[in-house]
Structure formats: C-alpha cells, structure tokens
Image (tube, one colour):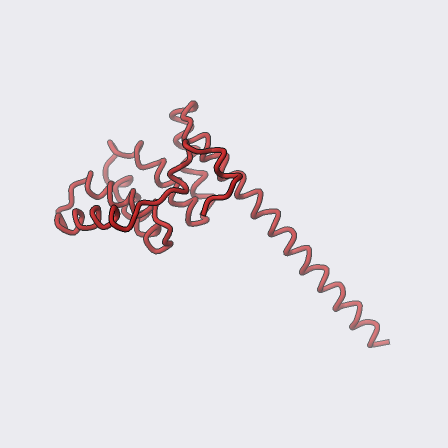
Length: 156
C-alpha cells in the first residue's frame, strides 16, 4: 500500500504504512476481550495501536475511537496517544485531524523525527489530493463549458 514517495520517510513513518499480521492483531484482540469490561489501559492501548496499523478502514476507525478514549480519559497517556491518533486519522484520510494531532506533538517535541516525517507525509498527501481535486474540478468545469457552448449553438 505504500508508494515509493512515502518510502523515503521510512523507518520514521513506518507506523503509517506497516500493518500487523492477522495473527498478531488477534493476540491483541483476545487479550482485550479477556479483560473486558475492566480492560487495563495498556491492553486497550495495544489493541488500539494494532487496529490503527490495520489496512482495514473499519478496524482503523475502531482503533482511533479506542485511542481517543484513552487520550480523553487518561491525561498521563496523552503524549503517547497523540502520535497514533495522527497516524489513524492520516490512514483514514482525515488529514485536518491528523495535522492537529501531529502539530500538537511537534509543539511539545519540535525535534521528534517521527512527528516531522508524519507531518511531511500529511502535507504531501494533502497537496497530492488537492491537485487531483483541482484537476477533477477543472475537468468538470470544462465539461460544463462545452455543454453550455453546445446548448447555445443549438438554440440559435
């Protein structure tokens, strides 16, 4: 799923592209389920981390939700949640949210190599998708112009 442009940021941004195996994720899920409903924070964090690293959008969404719960309920764990929340939102294509979390981390740790690389990945993806959006909207505008011209020619 990674492209060659993203690979130059590895290993620092590896969490954005490398997922766990199904077996590894299953181990984390079983531990979480065994402890439910009184799941230890570390178990919940590990499971959320594994889900965020998934290639499946549904699992990524669950991972972000669990990580967000830890972030909101346990102030002492916020620092370690911020990076993975940024990764999760990045993988879900929620770049504005990803940027908020990664910039929060960079405000605390301006030299954090992982955060700097992730910030660059987010910026690159936003730029790339923005250019695609401009091309698509430009193409749509051109089609509207062509259709309008044809309409006016027929109405004469």
